[in-house]
Amino acid sequence: MKMTRLHHIGLFLFFFASLSSGYSSNLYSVKDIVDSTYGIIFYEKYNPQVGGEDIRMNDYATPCENTIIDYYDDGNVLHRGSYVNGTLITYKNFYPDGKLERKFKGLAGGRYMLETYYPNGLLRSKIVYFRKDAISWNEYYPNGQVEFSEKYNSRFLLLYRKSFGEDGKTQTAFELVNKRKNVYSHKEYYENGAIKEEGGMTFSDEVVDFKREGTWKIYDETGKLARMEEYIHGEFNLETQANASAPKKAAATLTTAGGQTSTPVTTSTPQKQKASAKPTTEEVDSFFDEDDAATDEVVDPKKKNKKVKTTSP
Image 1 (cartoon, rainbow, N blue to C red):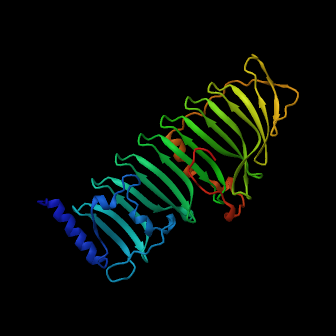
Image 2 (image 1 turned 45 degrees about the vertical axis):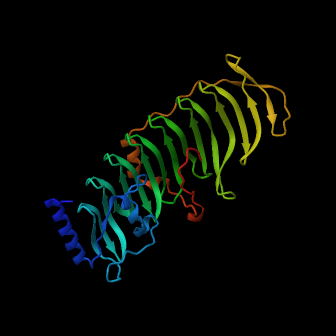
């Protein structure tokens, strides 16, 4: 294959960078370096802030230092990183066409930010790390809509976790409502935007997970109350069925966990609840700049909530 003048220049820069960094730069093929699902994750193993434990060595078997530039086998820049003792401090990766694939940099207060991008140039994810743990995490659909968002304070206490459809409608919303008692509000929505269920949850050290607590309301697809469920320390206690035939008040039958029923009671039928308004990218991104000081509380890091992307807690 005939090489262009630009490719010759790229290879010249590659060899120059290799000489200046102990022959540390490398050439890679696209198929070996770009994952179709996760992008260019090859270098994450050298980044201790995201869990990497490897040390990058040069051709003299010593840890890489200073700026290292890697290239695709056609001469285009793949990776430009700053290394200290073989570990990555800051870096940028690029798609074969030259578009930015991801960038990692330090922030004030011992924090670091990782941003990844789709091949079309739109933001794919934005994560802020503190003490090697993600405290803010946003992911986006290829059309730019927010897909998932969660945030912790500097004490690693979960503040909220939300998920959205590609159309921008809220799917789940999990938010801290009582910091002292570690109580959260959970809401889940149907695809049409109507609320599906809502209730409270508390974190259990015993099972290291969240448990339902108190009264939970369950709705049909029109947003009308169908029944209520009572939970005690995560265990189902009783259920209240709503009678849809009553226009203002719905008759209800109390059913215990053992299957026994009690005297019918009445409960008011609530108005249809609307789903949370669709957040804009600017609104969600603004969460990264909030001051956590007002929400900080001493929480044992060993008992911090594990960050797992799910559609419900």
